[in-house]
Amino acid sequence: MSDEIDNTKDTKEQAVTSEQMEAMERVHIKAGGTFLELMDRAAEQATAFIKDKFKPCKTLVLCGPGDNGGSAYATARLLHDAGFEVTVAMDTTCEPQQSPEAQAERNAWHGKVYDFMDVDYAHYKLIVDGLFGTGLHQDLRGSYLKVVKLVNESPAKIVALDISSGVCSETGDVKIDAIQADYTVTFHRPKYGHYQKEGKKRSGRIVLRDVGIVMGDFEEPS
Image (cartoon, rainbow, N blue to C red; front, side, top):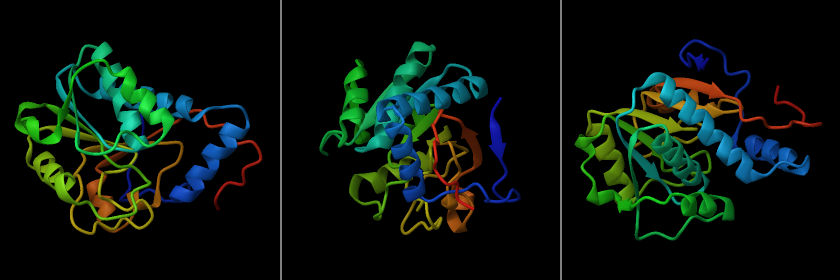
């Protein structure tokens, strides 16, 4: 069952910053887990939510250059295996995935990868936003701004992974533009940006999913 959060009413007591989330991930890895394992679990949980909410349909998965993009590639693979008609798109002019784990997820996708500008956004019933996650610390620029506009103008339902691309995960600020999600599937803990300013609106319904992070002696945020 999905743990949906009403970010207009529910408190943000369990919310964390991106730095706190990264610290939790480091504790998990120190305890014997791997980052690839967390990336796969995030994809599994996102896929489980999508399968529960939507029938198999034409689905566009947008993959960014970082770890959020890695989870998006894994989600695309799992949705394809579940019978969804999946198209994967990225900025083909950018550098490959920055982390080895994200690169591994990209390599595990054996279908074609299209450029953002070579797909018809009006063609899809569902769009998965895996462009940028909580690590985005700059304004969206260039082709990414064009993609955000195309996504927001499309008739598709939009599911963001972790946080809508363009929303600051710390403050909820949107400097230029951001994805307007119908649902945001976030992992382990909600982020402050889900509750604040424009981020509250852009997130849609928040769905919190467990990815099995081992907390060890980590001190929870108060």
